[in-house]
Amino acid sequence: MQKAKEALAKQEFIGTNGGAVSVTFFGNRVIKGISISPDLMNPEDVEMLSEMIKNAANSALKQIEQ
Image (cartoon, rainbow, N blue to C red; front, top):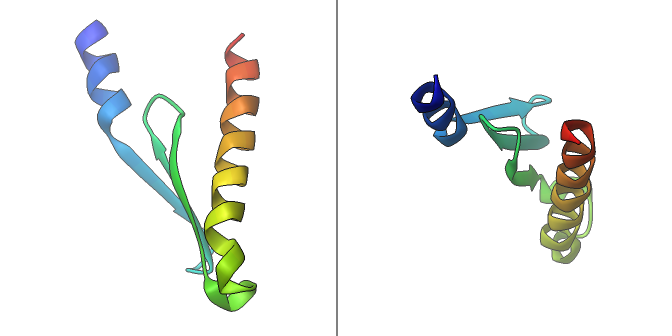
């Protein structure tokens, strides 16, 4: 069972809304990354916003686990 959990934790799952925004999770519910199309906003802000969303979502997921 433990080996199966470890293997799942390494797998990646990608959710998207058709290409403008995508979120990549590891199987252990940790966000690997977020991609936001520069067409949606100022391209200089995309990386910072992606990081902020990733951190906020991972914080919420940790609260769920607790």
